[in-house]
Image (spheres, rainbow, N blue to C red):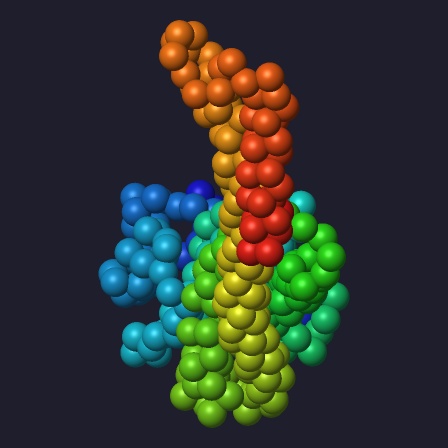
Length: 330
């Protein structure tokens, strides 16, 4: 669906235009441009715009279907770009990605938004108050959109860095617990975020070097600044990815050591139990033998038989106890 259709001429903008073809003709006559914003359009809704502006079918299909990698493509005198705005939901530790497709011509800009993003609305407000930006035409719109997207990347990078610091404190501190699930989840989010940031570096390089039409010489330094920010975000993401891998391995090693300690303690406990069971087996066995009540058994008529048996039991138990102590079982 069309969110807004605005005509920018003579440093002013008019919104809510219904006649798209008429607005395009006026933009061509006055040197202005038309900006049409769409939100999750269908192929049928895009059909009239495609015919009016001569949009390539492949680019239209990409804009409608979404789920594209960040890219920048040229189709004759028109440029098609796809970027993925991002924001970090801190309480869930999730990177939410939306998608913004931009068709850029000499006298028009068409933006197609999928998901939640306020970047098109923010850029529109800036155009209304910044005559210098408006003078750059469609190239100025693309610059501000990319600048806001990349600024969002840097905010996400900073937020992820805070969470990674917390995880490091937990893993290498005195706090016990299982952290593997949280580390793995954050690493997965970093990898997803990486797919949105890394591919954007090359398209921005093309914008800096002047390979894209309708980007003025005066606007290229602005794109160079955005390109530098993307490279900074990409470097941070690569570092976070390696760091999370290291932290995950350290956490697994810590868990393995803790499990080994538990196993050692269990073995020590089992040795102690086995040793006391062996000691207790002596009086149990002797008492069991003399409890069979046979008439003819050794020492049954001996006057000191009872004390003799106790002495034998005590002696054997003492010997066993000393042997177990010597072997560190007790």
